[in-house]
Length: 163
Image 1 (tube, helix red, strand yellow):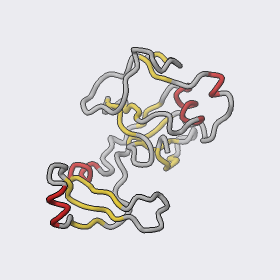
Image 2 (tube, helix red, strand yellow):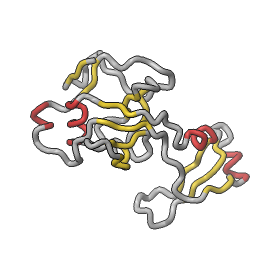
Image 3 (cartoon, rainbow, N blue to C red):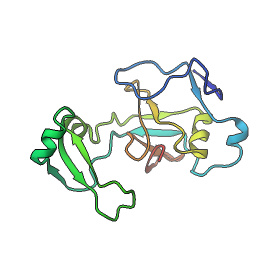
Image 4 (cartoon, rainbow, N blue to C red):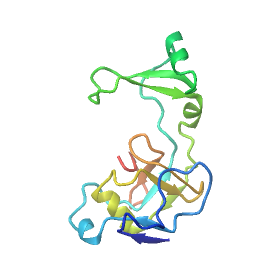
């Protein structure tokens, strides 16, 4: 595995994997000059695969109109967000597969190359996915992602990778 600062490098892969595969041949990182400007998040080299976070609010069954409108999407529940959540979003539909996947990561810890970790520390939202070395798949990161950070001392940071 190698690193590149060229976003057009043909060796780069993109997005999440649905089937196990080897790591990409190359991963994109910010240049050393960009990384040396300073971090907005702590530098952490490892993360745990914990699975997706579950709903943060009560779920309700779909109305008859929602069942008809979204029949092809496979939604089974709706999570209504409180009015003052600040995001402008009013809720989220959930499929049974998503609900079944809540908290179902392999719990393994993966350690990444320092330049990748520094890229996360400079720009937390730089990546949309990261690799689990046991599941052998790139899975989502961010507030709804599947990974939480591990501190340098081995303790759980608790916050999501890329958030």
